[in-house]
Image (cartoon, rainbow, N blue to C red; front, side, top):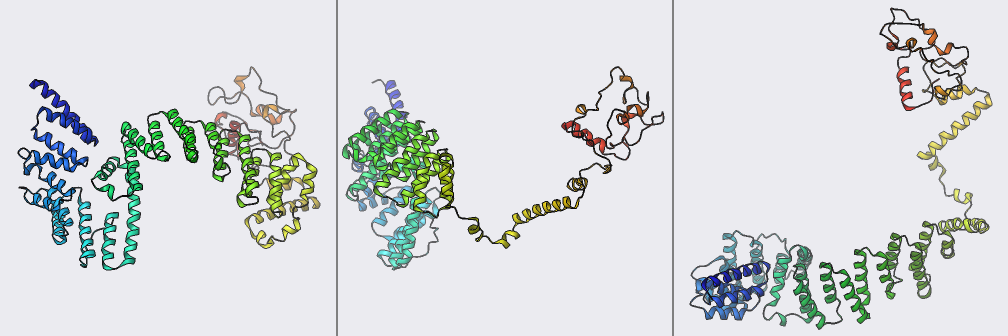
Length: 608
């Protein structure tokens, strides 16, 4: 291969390594690194990357073999940490300690590993000093981890060496710190205090895991990869190992590694054909790829092959149908789950969904089937009577009173003292059989019986009773006025107090047509045409043409007598010294004109 072509190929491979490293796909990165080493077998950077990829994939023996094979290229000052870490993970603790101590430069990474090695060697005093030095001289995002390790050393001293633990002043905000504190208390024999710490640690752990699952997916992926370490399978049970595999498949789905997700879930399904999670993970992956029909088909096939687990699968299928907007099809799937048809939760869900689709008949049918099941298996049980009550209320709500009669009769038979149910039954019968309603109404309690339970004094002193008494007293007063022969005018004056015109004269009979608009009154003659120049308010300011008596409609012979109107009690003579008509205000009633204008705008009836 030519040098130029090799350089171009190497550049493309390095880009692939970088991309895979950022995505955490170290298996694929390792393939690209091996291709680079085929071009240049002594590339120091490529060898370092290969070691890191092997460590990330849990292949510590192979990584250590690469280091030992290329000792001339990978010197101790370049690869000391990786070599010591592989020895530490392979439980070669003494070799790891020698590698760390022989390093020419003690980096922070080596110091961290040094503390871990001392802890494994149970040299707790030296380990405590190492972590104190790290916390004092380091400023990065790993301070919490160092404090956790420090508290673990103190707990180990208390448990194994019976040393009274010193107060480190650490704020127990994480479940790891709480757990280590509990271990220290156990070492001192303070079991009750330790139990409280463990309960707090458990709660904090649950909170932490619930926050990490969706928000820190990549961090969770790194944690799951720790389970690939050699020897882990000997420490965990089969159920725990299976749960780890499920989590790996879920993480592959959440990190958009569709092929990896399908591969892992298919593997799990082949190992446990009747387990629900593998097929549910596959269906979830298909839904993320917008293949809802294929996901439902996959679930349908599994339900047919494994009837024992069909209920859970069908619930998932119904959820997918609802997400697609196919509510009726979702109802059909739910009703096919025979073992759940009579459950109150299922009945509630189906009735709600059918009501949403305005299919009242199907909703009533769901109630009927559930009530029949309880009638055969658990008659008169609380759930049975509750379903009857809900069915009756549902039918009454949707105008099905005739259909609600049988349910209401059953409820009333179970509790004859239930007045509310009896009233509902009478109301339903009133539309179907009025005679039956009359017969049933005799079972209602009499008013005398009901009044015995009423506190009259409390009722009279209540706010509502005061209002009723006022109304009754007013009616009584009116009746007394009629008996005494008092005039209607006095009554109306009292009723309309504060709403009459200021110049109202009770001795004058009001205009019977005062409520009609002026144009509709019998004495209205309209405006005279052709005499615009003689109308009030026209022409130049200060000019006059006719006397005000000609403009006063109240002086017309054909006009019926009316009550005085504001400003028209006396004739207003117009002379050259008087303010022009458009600026005049009625004498003695400055606010009346404004009030009349407001009424005119609103289209109100005429005044007095």
